[in-house]
Length: 316
Ligand code: 5GP
Ligand code: MN
Image (cartoon, rainbow, N blue to C red; front, top):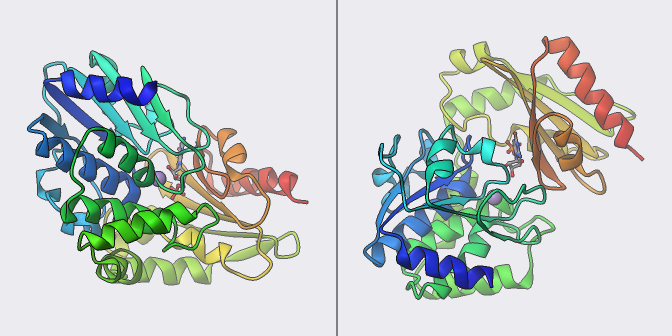
């Protein structure tokens, strides 16, 4: 069984690298740190390599041990978390490819099964909810610290326990973590409620720019590099903008374009039926049915037209 193999490989590996997807969110950071802390408990030599991540997650136990670069030598084992596609490994795909053994633990609907062993469940609402099974199989004690990392991933990827992927198991698991002393309301406040000033400025701009198409079923907004500079934004300050459109009555799909040095990063969210992962695959991306991302390298007006057209085609 895959899980037995994964346990065996982790036990036999001397040095391990943990990687996650670029533009890491709470589930990416939470799952990576939960596994990192768990492997440390087992006295493993482990590097967690993430070049940059949103400041809101710096409260997580041992976040200060996250490295921006790995070692030059080859790792015995590389583990990718919350990542559906090798190309999204934060620019560190070489650590993954060069490792003697490669494992992917993930919950993306579109996952290319790029590991030697893939523990992937697209039904799980967060990678952290899958990771618990792996940690238990490894005999790692779920401490308050590890639980805090795991619950951060669950809270952020479920939008605070409200998305359709939430299951009874999500709450059973959360109850178990609360028994360990994990503080739900404190994590919730830190990662879901508190908005940094730059983020607030970007949200204001993006909200004012929302346009509707197809009888209000499509919403569209964007931010530019200049907006981010002016707002003094840092990593992750654009998170949440795409949800503003999604939550407007009558909207089926919300489109958010964010200007980067290489073109526009696309974020899509849907409400009832549109499979936005399928749309993002057309734009070199992927993700989940209701939340996905991709990339488009065209001038703004062309990019806008192309992504709106792709969404129009999928409207009922
Ligand atoms: P976001 O819109 O928050 O950037 O991403 C929404 C979801 O889609 C996340 O689960 C994220 O991992 C996934 N996603 C975003 N961009 C890409 C991409 O370029 N490729 C793939 N495969 N998935 C993406
Ligand atoms: Mn995730």
